[in-house]
Image (cartoon, rainbow, N blue to C red; front, side, top):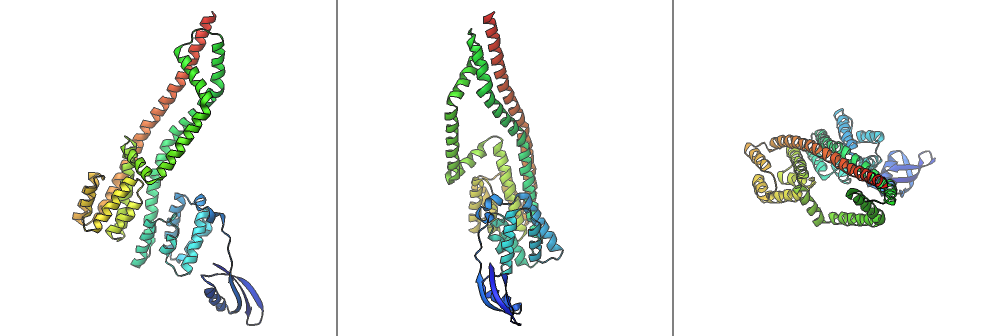
Length: 403
């Protein structure tokens, strides 16, 4: 906290200023250490900043955290003390959220707390998984530069997978957005006028033209109700998904979908294998490693299954047997864990499984791209083609009736 003081020098000169300290007593000792005689010491009430009021709006991105972990590890390997390294990174960081968190971490370190405890106060930036790794590194006496490198490497691998999926979905999303905008303009302005002109001349209109006219009139007459109904349905669905039963129902549905189900499986297995292997390699106890790895899984079905495995392992059941009894994990995972138990090298086997599921997830993303892009393109072509055929058939029918 910031503490304002008034004091006198030994020559009798009156001075005042601000110091950073944990309490007023520690501030008094700090002032006396500066060869001053304090007369008044009081804490300054700090106004909450916008970052503190809305931290989620200023949360640093994944790449920012990756750079922070790597740069901090580099500075520590170079022999720079932890406090000075964090202050240096705070000054150069582009993220307001990270700068605010690092400032608080520095104050906690100056107050005598460990780096892991200081990071634990910012769970949105430093998950429990990372905090525990740092605790193990601190307890081992060898520092935690290796832990920082591991955290950065894991985050980068996950970011590559997410970025590839986003890149794969950009093209279909652009087509859908452009199609929706074009369709709205056509149904609202262009087609109604053209169809109205066609209907004025009378004659027998083709089926496609009548369908297009009826659909356009329905959308124009009930557009507000349709939009309101969709918004209400979406809001109710969003609220339901936020509940525990809704989240479970959503995740179960995702696992049953043909293509998305495989991506869910591979992504969650990659998360489990990578986190569990890293924790075990850092000498975290097996049961605790299972619990921490389970919390990082995105799908609640696998998360609850992994937590049940951790509970059974705490009762003395072998992890491979606990995974087999859950009946939701792939046989390959069960066999790999059993092999690691027999060989006494579970972390090494999990590292190999991490590479395997990373490759499988990349392949699944590639297959998804190959499936989505043609489907979206053909769907857009069918809609545009139907509109064009309906309009031109109506024009030809009108011209024929006039002739």
